[in-house]
Length: 211
Length: 211
DNA sequence: AGCGCATTGTAACATTGGTTACCAAAAGAG
DNA sequence: CTCTTTTGGTAACCAATGTTACAATGCGCT
Image: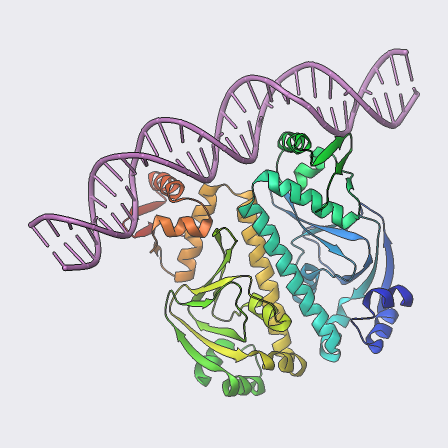
């Protein structure tokens, strides 16, 4: 484990902290599609991402859902952090978007390390900061963009995350993540295809330009 | 200053920290409507709210705007925190919603205290946590609620913040904060009045039930 | 090949929200 | 008190999005 740890976090943490993480952390391989956190669940450990990506979704009581943002290598889940510290239930759902490697840290270490390691403190503050910015971006999209622009942004984000301009999603899946209906997505995708931005296929979409 | 400080933060911070805050902090009286932070501005000190309320707005490049949330006594601005630590420009605008008393802390103290005082660390983490939750609530409203429900939630929130079921706003002001048009707000307000939920008057709205 | 399910295309229509235009009432300025 | 500005009411219309319904296509399974 120590090698992956150093690759992803060596530039952030001092050796003493890396050693401790190596001792108390549990390395995990998560397959794509695996559910890491369910809404309402209590959380007892926090993930440090090594590789892959995790999708963070918001659900409401009526079964509506919405994609909030993705976590990538070097990220941790600030919502999890927050829930750990306050011993609250999770407000979100986390699903592996890709095959993902991560290290789980028991929450007891959290507090200890925030007192002990300046680099850990900075890491945690930075995580919060980045998550706030992601949330802001999400709010911008929902509040200020029309659905066609939101859809295009979604496709581009997805291509960036997977590092692949082939997006392997059905129209229905996209509709769920953007909290709209399949018909609307099909309509707008067809329009994007007519504009030459994408090429539609069954079960996947090719993004012509990632710029 | 020490007295207001103790009233608002005495249960959170140990005496040593309160003393330091008293030494380095600057007490300020902010009149309603005063602009505290502008978008793009660099921030060199962070506010601890003693009384009153501060409105946090998001602006986009096209002059669109949207209310994110309110800060109240015992809160601090996590966005400010984030900006301070990272030395980033502000992503938001902050305006006094009521006459507000606060204490400004120079950012240099921030890092020092996070190392030195556990209560300060917890306070900062809690602030981040609360702000993330507020942002989630904002996202819920925009994504899952139709404008009539959003408007009603807005009126209720405003009544709670001001502790007054008379909301002193014009339709235009409400429209800006919800990022819609005056005509839409007038239409929906009239409908709410017909349902008996509110009573409309020039320059203010009476909320009939706060429940 | 043939069946059945999942996926996509598309039309027709309903609803919500945004825009423009215009009027009237109230408040403020002189 | 008169003139002007601000605020709110309302109609008519448009654009975006959501809904329902149904057809067509492709894929997996046997």
